[in-house]
Length: 368
Image (cartoon, rainbow, N blue to C red; front, side, top):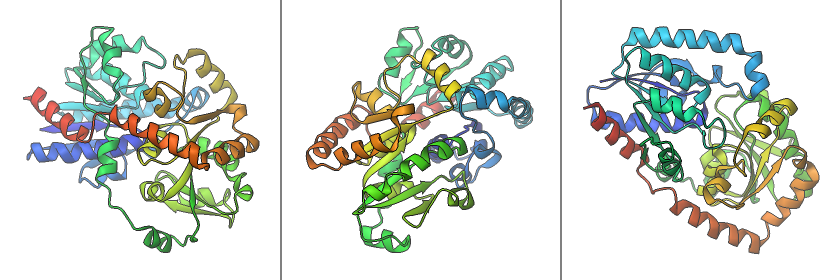
């Protein structure tokens, strides 16, 4: 069968790559053409577009790049028609993918959607578009099945694919990890400032501003695969190291982490690393988002737990003073132990390992 897969972000690249691996096991004649990243390409697929050319963050930024987005949509439609897939698999990335879903359905192309847009947070009316134009939705968060049921949409809850990604990793011993990356023999505080230039530019300097207050720790930035080394150099000093494309290795050896809101907050929790969630955006974009978002938290960790497990520092709260205060709390044994216990309960809600395999099984059965 021929599969055309579209994702536009680093997390989508990870989950789509694991899905491709499982689909290949079940379909010996499978052929793939994709929009994604290096991890998908490592599975031997043909990459039509890399996600580094697609990531625009926030309302204002989207408006500023509208011409590029429209050109991408036009290219995508033409490319899909030329490829003639048996199924179009859309992975998250809703601003782009929902437009493609509407078009594809009208073209008579079967549409699967893996990892639901966060319509429970905002733009809930998108559920009607999904109901009409998506043949099957595969959701990864436990509360999403109930959300869709409220609108008479039957979806498949497959569990969270992060559990697969973390379970299948190769663990590097701490001493070897430090030696490989020229790190000191000090406890590590990981800095995960996001994958987009805009969020790194805004958030990383604030994260770095606390370093001098914690001399017994070494701070290490997790470099995103979508950004090159030169981009980070203007922010870093000798007091902070940069490790690229090794976020999971960094997390498994960290004592604590400062994390930009997004999938990384859940990854950090699944590694059992105490964290502070950081978020700061363009003022106008944030005001618009604040007006339309319908959930009480910005981090996946707190949303799944349905309570504040991890501290969220948002906009003005994200400053050096607050960050130092919260990081000191995070390093206290009592606070840490309670958070680790809460993390265990969080993991139980996510459905266990095997999400990629379950999704591939369901997709193949629906296609047959």
